[in-house]
Length: 258
Image: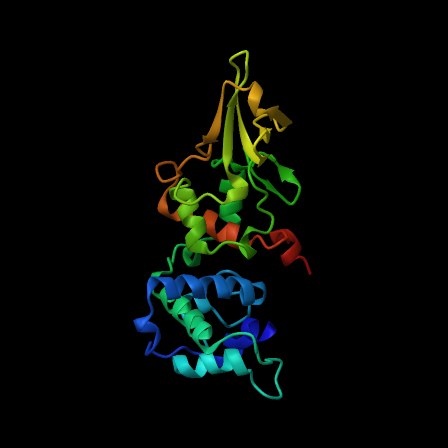
């Protein structure tokens, strides 16, 4: 599987799309899944973890056709750290290329113009994000832990979450609301539910478990995360996204300490 992870590092500059321009939306989606499963661990979700390479913005080393890149993903490069990926078909390798083409075409430049230091100050201050989120052990556990979010989400996805948080909610981050027999409504992040029970993490950071038969009502609730489109300016959004992209399990201070 390391061949798919290292392929584009070794190949260099993507040429003008030849085959990828005919890719369907399904092809691109399939390529995105394959990239996330086989490439993002080394290259990151934005493809920018390798020095001098930025797959998400089309920044590479030399020009190759789509077919040549797909061939390298499948067959590797002899006498290099890039081994073959025998279980990956040429078609799926082309889907990865198509996904990268689409990413390059649609990638927002907001994170590139942001400053992670300023973004951290906004995150912890004006944005009050630590009221819900936790980073490197600091902050609330109500929302998802963001200590490694830069390894999991692309900059464009993080920007969308800030501007339109309801557009895409990961299953592990869904909120659920229950109304008890004494007419008390409790809302929190859903941990688990089945035919008979529901468990959630309430707004006071307590683990709660309920029998559905004892509830007057229950069901999914909207996320409590607000849109920051009206609260933060364009540059502030760029700064916060840049900070979130930098979160890869190591704090800014740790990464800059000699």
